[in-house]
Length: 331
Image 1 (tube, rainbow, N blue to C red):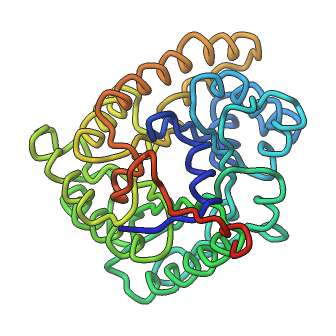
Image 2 (cartoon, rainbow, N blue to C red):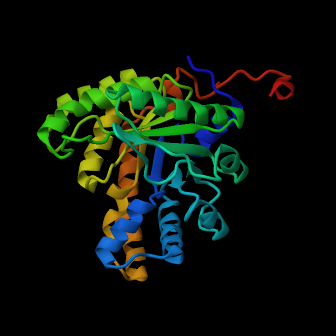
């Protein structure tokens, strides 16, 4: 049984719905979002356009989500200052820089310069999130990534704030991501990644779905992969969307939650089509009438099937940690 501290418990409570279910929307995209808008609207968005996009998304999705994930450059402080982030929705903030450092063997995560856990805590956020490109089969790079994760995890312990880690599989030279061959490797890589990363003192794993549903369609088999992921993860875990279409993500959330996931932290699958809409008012209507309803539907699935985060840790909702008379002296 894992023992949690008061600050981490409070943060997990803030980003989850009762009874301990995560219904979270990711909006921390930066370079990827710029590319989506540029491709669809044939122009590079400036700072103000990106901030307005985040404000609109946060205003539309915050009412449906238990937590929203935002970036420091365009979203987190701006949504607080713009008064579109309600007090009842948890705020997760990214700590990594967008993109990655190139290495001859693969990719390395870089932390955002002049940013860090202390500032995320000071601004009133509920949790810290870090994306790491991860290949458990490339040991030298995996060891470097684990050291970066461990360093941030230590900071999160120091400032008593939950830490979510998002490992992302990627192709190396000679591989093709969208292929049956790569898909056959995915279950083992995702499961082994969960095993290695959750051995560190992180609090929630933001996991990839452990299969490519373009090639693996057997629901029973997919459920078994997710059960293997659940067994490998020492922490509560949620499913990320990785830009798949909404219907696929809905199926992934259902299968994962039935297998032990505590919810989802989805982004592009929920709102990506809106980037095709240049007119702000029409885009707002899409956020409200389509993406918002998607979040509601996913929330219903999650609340029906997901396992509360504290159950994964072997804890009871009425007794998450021992608190004695002198706890504040030792805190």
